[in-house]
Length: 446
Image 1 (cartoon, rainbow, N blue to C red):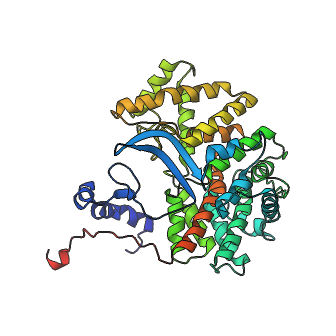
Image 2: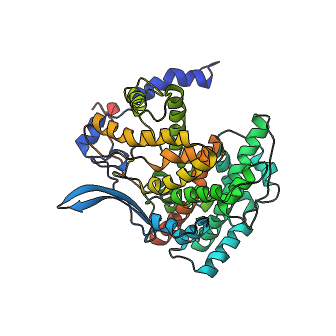
Image 3: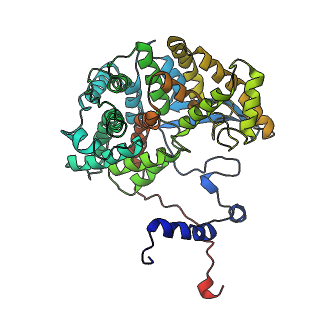
């Protein structure tokens, strides 16, 4: 490094070299038949493994052609819609469905209670962990704060580096139990240290479910309604697993294949999930909705709403990227089953919270945006995805935006855990993808 030159200055002066020498033209991907992003020219994921944990269905095969159909999401042989319908009106099922995903079969009444009690008893964090770890260097990036905590936990676990199925299962269940506290305490610590707020440390209640504990620990008065708990529980169930082909689950399996310990594996998955193209999507929906509210006067006026949506698509409004966030999905076509299930709960909560006007705006966008996108892109099928409503729900529950992606992680740790165990028990090979070199060998005169 040149004398007296700061690293920031050096990086600023040399970033252009990266732009010049590290960009590879999409033309070369076509020329060599390489699938960018592990997706073929139709957007279908390249097969990289087998799984019994879950399945996504978005097309029917008919006459050798793929025909878009109503979306389906299956957990261990059960449709997620049926799993949620099978619960009582206010029954909370997160722990029950977690058992199903982890162990591959539905628990009976005794097994379900035993697992629920086990999770509850495992919720307390190690002694002084909040003071010594979570409250040190708090940040608005709750995902980073949680990842730091996950890695620091290794110093509190004498068997941290053991990677047997039994040890991995124990650690996975322990993390499932700890995640709500890691998220909520990280948020309260940030508010106290950085925003001059009040620090609330409500101990988790072993008699409460995961959804109930989140609401209880987050709120100063520790109170919540049965409907609030039910809606949050449903959101967690819908987010806990998604077909195995998503980025963070693939990261989980890649890191597991190296023989890495459970804590390192889950920390890597957290880093993947926090990206705005993955777990942060519902925040973009909320930011977009804030912008629409500021520019649309009548939420029931379809013509006014459509006019502003067209401005967004023309890159004249919001973030000027031409995207309607929450509409469309990389896999689903006609419908996202998670959004279909979730919408009825959203409507109930909106009525309880007096947010019918906001709901009307969402419904107007849901009714009109898919058609606008189809016209602009001359075909294709677009539907609202689960992120379209999830941010609205969290807002109605009084959950701060700093915790939106963390809530995704609290749910998805279950799916990651199931895939880690399946990878460990299925293969003893490291996942090692191939990259074709298109390097210029200038030193050889070529």
